[in-house]
Image (cartoon, rainbow, N blue to C red; front, side, top):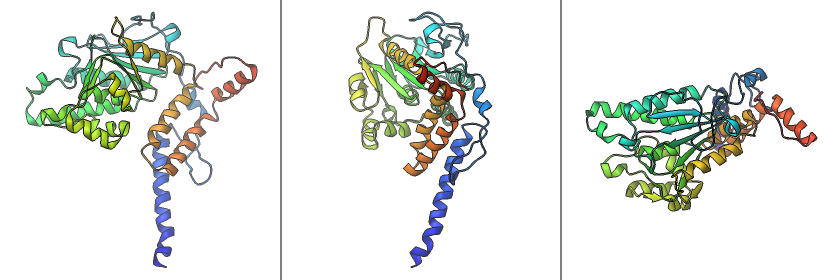
Length: 338
C-alpha cells in the first residue's frame, strides 16, 4: 500500500524531469514552441526559421577548388565551396611540420572558426579534413605540452575539450575525412563529427594511456557511445591503433576506401556524402540532428517527446509546403530554409 501511495508522486517527478529535458532541448531550437498534450512551451515564430538559410556564395572547382579563405593563417584553412558544392564548408588542418598536432594557436583558430560557422546560415554541411598527406591529426602538440608546467596542462586540455564539444554541437551535419594518422586528440576530433570516413591505410587510436594519461578531449565518452563500452575500454586500455578496415569492422567509421594516388580518398567520399545532404530541407536537417543527439542521451519516452518537439518545428515552415507541392508537381523542391 505504501508503495502504491508513493507511485503517483514518483511518476510526477519523472514526468517533471522529462519536461525539463525536453524544454532544455527546445531552448536550443529557438525562441520556443508548443507540443501537443502535456509537453508545452511557447510557440515558435516561423520567421525565426526564415532568417538567412540561403546557399553559400563563393567557392571554386571540384578537387582542390575552394573559394576565398575565411582565415589567413595557413595552419587552418576554412573554405566555402561553390557551384554544385555550394553550402559545403571545408575545415582543413595544415600543420605539416607538427603532424597537424593540436597546439594552443590551432585550438584558438578552430574555436574562432567554429564560432563563426555555427551562426552562418549559408552553411549546410562541414567537412573536417587534413591538408597534409598521410596525416589527419596526431593529437596534442607534445613538444608544446612538455614546456607547460602542471598548472597549465589542465586548463589547456579543457580548452581542447571545449572546442571539440563546439564541433560536436554544430547545428549542421559534420563529416570527418580521415586520410591518414588520427591519434589521441585527432581521433577525438573525428569522434565529435556526425560521420567518419577513412582510407584503408589510415591509422586511428586513443593512445593516451601509453603516456600515463587518459583521453581528455571527450574520447572516454564518445568512443563508448560509438562502438560500445566493452570494446571502447579494450581499445583505450591497450592503446591499440586500428587501420581503416579494422575501424570499419568495429563501427568506428561509416565508410572505408582504398587510398588513391592523390591521398584524398576519404575526402572525396566525404564530399560525395555532403552532396547527398545538400538537397534536403535545411530546417529539417538541423532539427533531425538535434533530435538524434539529444534523444540518444535520455530514455526512449523522453526521446520521443524530443522528436515530437523537433517535428513540430517543421510544420509551420514554407519548406514543408514546398516539399508537398514539388511532390505533387513531380519536380525537385526548391528549399529556402524558411
